[in-house]
Image (cartoon, rainbow, N blue to C red; front, side, top):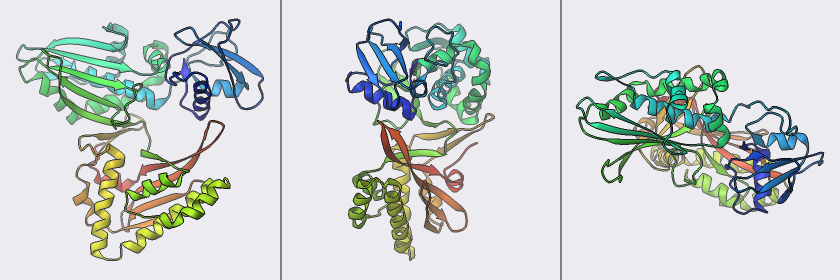
Length: 425
């Protein structure tokens, strides 16, 4: 089991790190013997009606004290946590974390689906066969050696580094019925024309290749926008020759970027990408934040930003300059300025969407943009074309963190962005 990515899980993680500086929120934990002596005690907010002990791999016992809901809400991987002697049922893992593993497995299955002279169509069962029948060569890596059409031997490997409870779910045949609906989108994506052509280039080139698929949701990779990617290595030296098909994965979400809030510096940086100077709002913004009125403070900034945008695009030259800034902002937010990154969103019933941000500029030049502020509990700023609707929105909300409220700004695609960003679905 592990700590969840929920607000409760993040709060528990922060409290543990105050006593254990090297604690990793993603590390795998087990249920300790509840009679075992605790090394640290973590007091959760609210009434301490329950105590529950977890054990790290190094043997450290962590005791959580708090309400039943605060303990269970912060844990992944099992059902009710506060009855240690009771048989526990596997809970559904987080969809985003699981999607990374499913996509990596689907890409691996596609690369090794060599049938005669062609790459075959992958099924969901091909994914499960990887986990059920293929023995890993390390704790994280699977490896297959396969001949290409010219007789050369290719080494194809898959690195699965996900949270422990996600890996347990992928390995558990009893979870398959629930996970199949999530697996359909990755399977359909790799079976697309692009996925098939990508796999065939290695199968039909007549030379030895080494191709790795990396699904790494654990390592700190703040400089990398992609969640799943492949690389080609020299089979003799092991040196990486090139990275291929980097994917920033969004499991069913409209969001393609996020930005912190609360501090005026963060808000200034966010809107600075659009060339908007909100410096004149700082004094009032800081006063609202100090008074705990975070949503009101964000609303003031969003409203001011919308007005500045509309005031500054009153002629053709100004509109052209705004489109240039808009193009740069979208590429930075979505891909970290890597033109090769594809933003893939997985929907329901096997649907998926692929967005490319490397050719937006010519597609936006003839659009007539304006901004609209929408007040409310989660205020929004729309950037939209006057005829074709919303390109994207910036939205703010409060997330519970470390016993308080933490402001986040999320950037979400609109229908127009899906239309012009080379969407394949």
